[in-house]
Length: 251
Image 1 (cartoon, rainbow, N blue to C red):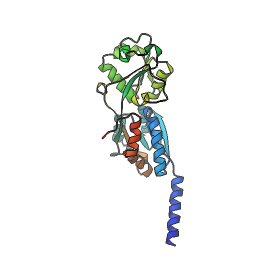
Image 2 (image 1 turned 120 degrees about the vertical axis):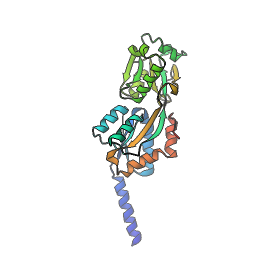
Image 3 (image 1 turned 135 degrees about the horizontal axis):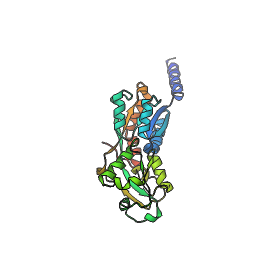
Image 4 (image 1 turned 90 degrees about the vertical axis):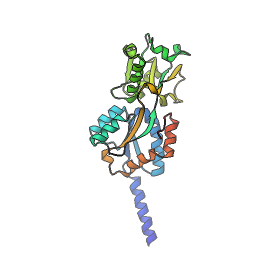
């Protein structure tokens, strides 16, 4: 009889898990691909479904503060998660750095083959330079900081085309609408991209560290699946996935 009761309880638990509402994770655009893989691994190991929504960190932050039904934020900076924690929209004590990004100057313009990418910034001529919007995208902030540190901001400003997020920035340069682009280092590793004609890794010392922070959001305060996803991000399996996409893993 006891054994039968245990079986019934286990079946009930499985039934609840199978029909539980998926957790919704808001993800910065640059982290879309690793987030999808991480969601699959977490679903397989926990049985909890994960729904991914992507946009620039700034847009996701604004949506969260306006009541968007997200459970977790994976930002591309530390500023917005900190602001969410301070406002009460994020759960205090759940914020942590899950990855550190990098910036790459990249082109597929055939006329730049074997050329010095950085030298092109001093004389863009008719070319456009794509960067993410510094007002909404952390990679745009880093791009602007680098250009200012190199004393190139005023030179390139008339040639800039702004992506709404780093994914759109990549589209501009891959499509040829911009001759050069400052994209995420993780994007530059994507084997689906065409071969670059010039590529240069921007020194991390020229901009503020691109710390990517995660935080549990207020609506998921008692959501064990959402809290479990954040714990999973700290685990070795998740950290290995993140590193394969070109991100530095924090200690």
